[in-house]
Length: 270
Length: 197
Image 1: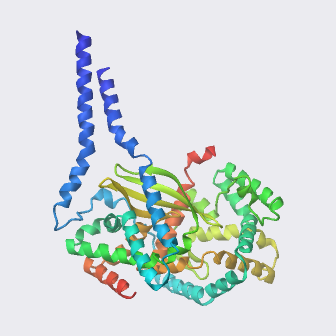
Image 2: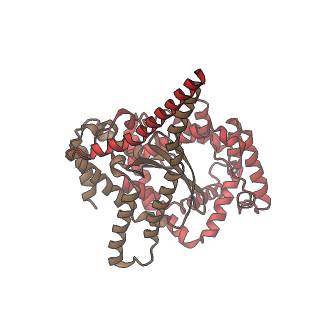
Image 3: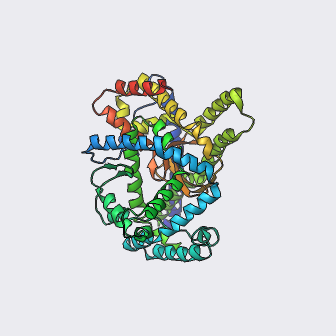
């Protein structure tokens, strides 16, 4: 008897559950229909929950006048000098060669990524950077081709000292725009200086103003720029206040880089 | 036992809509992005006459891909509630125009790249993040679309490129204006920006 009662009861529960799930399925649809019948304010209000889905990132900007001045300096530098040079370079050098150069510089910067992956507690990625370096420097002819990725599917992981410090819990501090170098903050500036000592071109000469070292660095920058001409223009055109837009993009980009690579257990099985 | 069966049944039935939607958002975004790119690539739409037709076609395709009202609401956040219904309408129109003017021509340069849709991650009951990787000759660029289910379809309300969210970026800019000014000042600023074109 109790067994039959049991079965009857669970049957009714299943029925109830079904009803409930049906209700759940149709409820939102009805809600939308009702909302559309009111013409005066068809768009409706924003709830706290929806508002929280996007965050306007915030960074202290105590030296905004300096930063804005530097932003304008960099803007003019781009339009008057860097862009024309980059365009001429892009026109003169075929894309396949520019990709070879880009691979070469990327390969050369391996120590920066190797050390920082280690510092971030990721020996797996550090190892991959090492393997990539060996393969690309030999089979890829001094890093001209990315054989490790194209042939073996081994990809590296970007890592820099600013990111490492961020992962150690050091805050970004306030916003700084450096002339030529662009958006930064105290933490990433320290990172930039630290990484400088991990870049092989730093040791080409003991002279800080060695012409060959400078030429190499300038060529790297121009070569990289030749792939990105037009990106800044789109950003500027789309922005209401390009200075704020750039500041926010930098903050979001760095924040993501620090958070994303910080806790990604799924990636470890790769 | 009773409780177990009941909760299992409840679980199964409430899960069904979740499973049914798996992959649909990704497929929708895939096909809607493709149709925007197809119009951009269309070799028949050249010259002055073709340009007008092309622009209209891109706008139509973009309307299918994006939910501009949702995008506007989430950009302004709680500030949206300070706008009157008329101001809301105008804001959506102006915002749409600014995005269109900035991106419509320039994005044509990116149409040759390969796009891989990797996965979709549920964010809430009605929103999903569709993740894609655009492979250029030089690098892989992650582009994530945040989409919302409305009226049975999936529409984009945010695009996140290399970790930078479109609506968050505009929210920071708009907040700067709305901090010390009424909403009408924001609309003035947007009108001026659109008028300059």
